[in-house]
Image 1 (tube, rainbow, N blue to C red):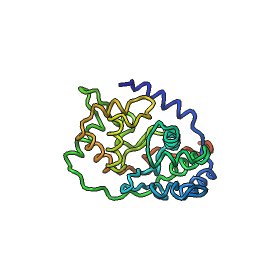
Image 2 (spheres, one colour; image 1 turned 120 degrees about the horizontal axis):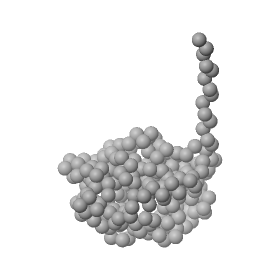
Image 3 (cartoon, helix red, strand yellow; image 1 turned 90 degrees about the vertical axis):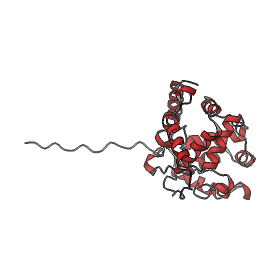
Image 4 (cartoon, rainbow, N blue to C red; image 1 turned 180 degrees about the horizontal axis):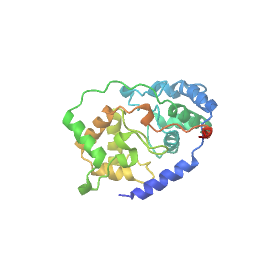
Length: 240
């Protein structure tokens, strides 16, 4: 498994390139999500919902509040064929660079979209998933999920998505894709190495655990402010 240090370096490099998001770009992204200027079947909301809440019946994940740069990278990977999807590849290729960045900025701005009630899951499997997430399995060189995705899978901007509250079937499908080698757009190959060591039951356990976590908006990867926040005014000193 690649060293944690390499992950930290990648995180820092991506963070150094992050820029503030212009509200006009977010508004442009909202219009793109609704299908403005696109073919009817390319509108984001058809599968992911107007507010990025996702549609599990469509196999579409929740996007609301995901890190902007992570979403941008996924669109680029779909367009270049580094990540395969019959639905997403033609959509990503139809978007211009500016449109893709705007759509990512819009979905990243949605931090208060409510979660649906989690479905019932076997408590034993959920607990097993929680343990794997928190501490992994050192004997099999399975790293804890929280190393990259933070405690309880709330994500670490700008490069590591949240998986807390994500639909179980989607998370399970992605872990299986990493395991089988059909998904391979992780620049450090960490996900493939971990997934290959997980049993099918462990993959299901992780998916069920994360699907039941309900992070607060504040705990998700926070949006990057458009401008630096000025320091508070100095408080006049009071003489005795």
